[in-house]
Amino acid sequence: MIQNSSRRFYAAAQLIEKISQKLNRARGPGEMQPLQWSILRCISRHEDAAPHLLWIADYLGLTHAPVSRAVSTLIKRGFLTQSASAHDKRKRHIELTVAGKIQLEEDPLQQLVIKLRNIDEPDFNGLIRTLEKLVLKNDEK
Image (tube, rainbow, N blue to C red):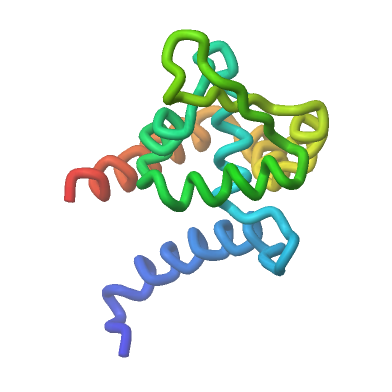
């Protein structure tokens, strides 16, 4: 049972959960999964860094195995390609294909970005400060 003093915190947590659910509603087989979206975004933002598997895993704060599986799936779907590094043959650079760039146009985060743009500046800045506190406090544990 939730105590009265905790109700508003629980309600806030439920609102955050709802945002996550809306962003990740298509979860069936063959659908883009949250990690796959994260990988496409990561590569799109850092193409100049010539990302490779371990770099992507480190950037996302994940272990190698799930990132490797997701990258393999994205390659099979034609959204990514791999090529051997000229400097280190153990590393394979991962790049977006044209299909991957087109897929990113359907990124569920785009709908959230549109909604965030409609928040006035003081409220938006307060939101950012609050979210940073949540993320930083969770990272410290």
